[in-house]
Image: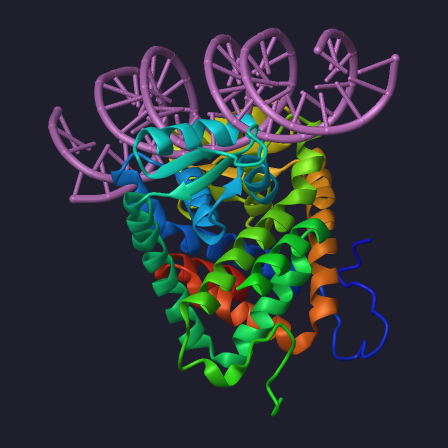
Length: 169
Length: 169
DNA sequence: CTTGGAATGTCAACAAGGCTGACTTAAACT
DNA sequence: AGTTTAAGTCAGCCTTGTTGACATTCCAAG
């Protein structure tokens, strides 16, 4: 399994022969890049004594206003108890509003308040600024490739969720 | 290379104009992809009651055998107390060996034992398998772009560390 | 109509792994 | 000799994951 090289796939193997070393570099690139990716929002959140979990909740509530707790759970891939803790503080702090469902009263529909939307804006401005700079530096074709590889790296279920969100916009 | 258009409704021509929506999609792609990226090793580690922190330590000790604690600290971006907790269990479990430095006896040079190397192999085989599949699916040019964007997204300091590791190999 | 099961959300307690701060030890440098 | 540096330790805190127990609501079968 580790002759330092990995087998060739169907078609065009001469162009795509992936050594363990090349793959290892990709792994490290993901590690370091993800750190950069989260660094700016993390700094903002630290001042507010929130964490990355709060950011994720705010992000997806912003993208899908009125979503239920269960929806959010699936997207975020955490337990409902874990999410609930974060949600509770956001609601207590007046950033998120939780309305009892109209048809099904078991559900809660989640929305950002004005204050919540303002924080969302601040956080994503910071994150987008870095992303924009990286996109500009790398160029359009690199960006297309970037997105293709990321998509191929997702778990199938998450990939479907991602595509659903993408196409809705 | 000249038509520059590849799926995903992402036209390269629009890159001077990076809409918030396009950037948001990139942000979500990073989020979902990173989850996939860590999923396989996480499963293996859970059975051993280790966590991602142990994986990272093992990974970088493997890449730079004989590295010092201080080096590792800088690469991983955590405090020595945090790293020490992880390192202590790895040493106690016989996966990592800590040798007093030859020239500077204050330093400790870290190496994987045979058992440590075996676990490293198992973890990175899993992670590489996914990476390889994603690379194959996306194709060589996408991979080049992927790496370029990731590199541009890193903090400058981490970028230097990344390049140093890359060029050493 | 009632009742039992499924879905949804909440509360409590615990563990991993970050963090800070204070301190020790040993070696190196000046 | 005195200072600085590398490493390790102890204590305690916070965020954010986890399970388990529980309350509420809905719906469908009896």
